[in-house]
Image (tube, rainbow, N blue to C red; front, side, top):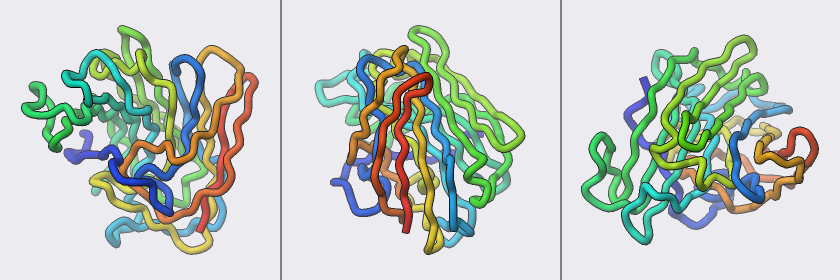
Length: 249
């Protein structure tokens, strides 16, 4: 079951370490139909803690804040996350949907996180992964206009997927940027890595072209963070357009 807690949108100015707005996103011309987040190179990572608990983190592949038909006010924005979250007994793979600045009351079946509203897709359980397995983990998301969106979490040996209707926040009509990272496990928390950690982050995107996606700095959308500092970001075109950057402490 998806955890009953919000993986919040950022609302603060970008800070110094990764998250809460301070992150690179892959930006494309046109609309995305999918994205894949991975960690091609990981070095020096031996531990991670969140509120003193080891291996307590989330992997989030997030859309941009969008203007879509589901919001009911001029300041409302929709947002969709593809998430793997570690848990007390096992992890969960699911999508979390947001109506930012929607106001009150929230739609039926949605939770209030005033002035925002959020809800979860169906979820699937996945084994908790220790942080030293990070290089073997990926999260992918896809959007189908008027169809079914999906999230897939892969480990070294297995894959776990969940689905939901694209019409929940109309992702396919507004998705043109994607953020991916390893960060705190909801509620705006921080994943704290041991000193000497270095992680290469790759965001591969699908928008029907081979064009190089842009690296947009300070473009992150989640409120969760980690204690790493961003390095240089580079974009690549071709059969698998992507951006790649390093974060370290």
